[in-house]
Image 1 (cartoon, one colour):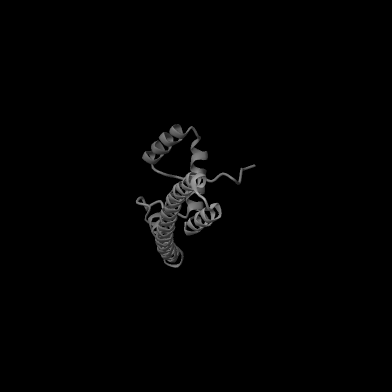
Image 2: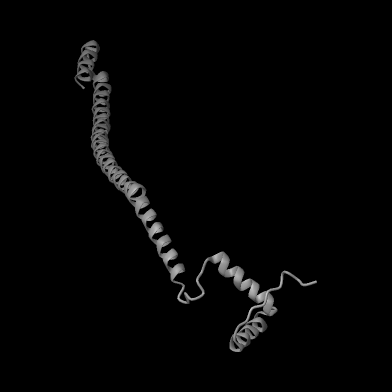
Length: 167
């Protein structure tokens, strides 16, 4: 009985020697290598005469064109608007920060002026308190000296009280 799966194929001796070299190189039998070659061309739909892979180049070029178009669309619809929004947001934040810094600086300068004024007033009050103490001590000493010599002690007390009220 004859095996129906076997077909004969005739080809030149030179092609057979090339097939033998390829099968040795890949470690396969000539039949296995031949089946794999047929399967490869069947699956990839490549033309064996197309040694420059023009079909593959055309597919790659088409995919590259599609990918480039997709990227340009994403750039136009997403990236550029996002960048513009970010630039606007950064600009407005800079304005807010500048305004804030200006107002804070003005406020700090006002507070500093007020504190300086308060320190001056406090210093003046301390000085006038010291002056007041000195005057009061002088009046008290004068009263003490005059009391022993005074005939009218009530009159001396009234004069001393009047001097204290004038302080």
